Structure formats: structure tokens, C-alpha cells
Length: 76
Image 1 (cartoon, one colour):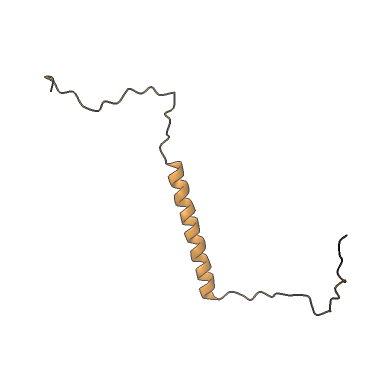
Image 2 (cartoon, rainbow, N blue to C red):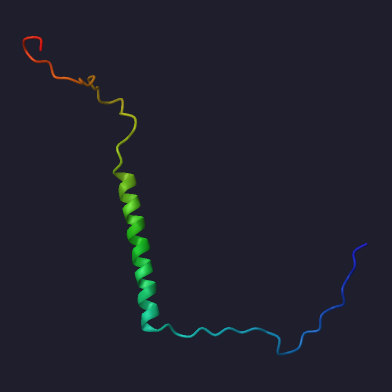
């Protein structure tokens, strides 16, 4: 059996209201700076992501094996 508590009686002054005040100049500049920094960081990460070298070469291009040394005439 679940115990029930007595119903609460709300007074007319118990509602909570919040009024936002307008931002000051310094607060707006800080918010803009944070937004610009976040945008620049996201742009940098996206640019690095899209410019990365693919790990697997495409099958369309045939690649020759890489030579580690250049061969000199005369066997040297």
C-alpha cells in the first residue's frame, strides 16, 4: 500500500517569476568573443578533417611500388 501525503495548499504569492535584464556592453562583447572562438575552432577542425590524406588509395589509379633508394649507374 502506498502512503499518500496531504495535498499541498498553494498561496497566491507562491508562483515564481523571473525577469531578464538587458545585457551590458562588456557582457555582450564576452559573449561575442566566445561565439567567435567556438566558430573558429569548429572551422579549423572541419578544415583539418576535410584536408586529411585518405588512408586507402582509390582503385582507379594504379600506383607503382615506392623505391627506397635511387639506383646509381655502376652498381653503387
